[in-house]
Image (cartoon, rainbow, N blue to C red; front, side, top):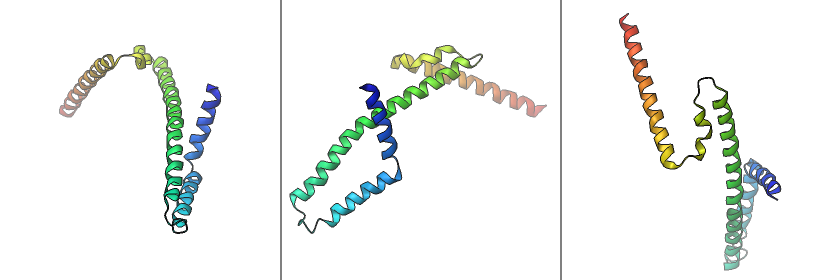
Length: 132
């Protein structure tokens, strides 16, 4: 079931991101607008578009979330593979998605501190090179 839904979500998300899907949606809206005077802008006329768009939006939220979850997982796996494959890289970064928010913030601050130190060393080296 999960595999079927995942494939369905991927195909649907891909199709709905296509220009043809946008043109189809715009055509439906245009037809709805044009038929307004025919139906005297009745409550039923309004209810049709409101109900249709609500249902589509509700379902698309789940499809989009499924696709984003899958994309995020695959990207995380690819990044983890790169971290693990790099000589000198800290392998602890390969599984940081399992850390708590506080642990992530501590790690983020440590990385910022390292980046600041590296930048300071680089700037000092550039100043030294200019004097030479």
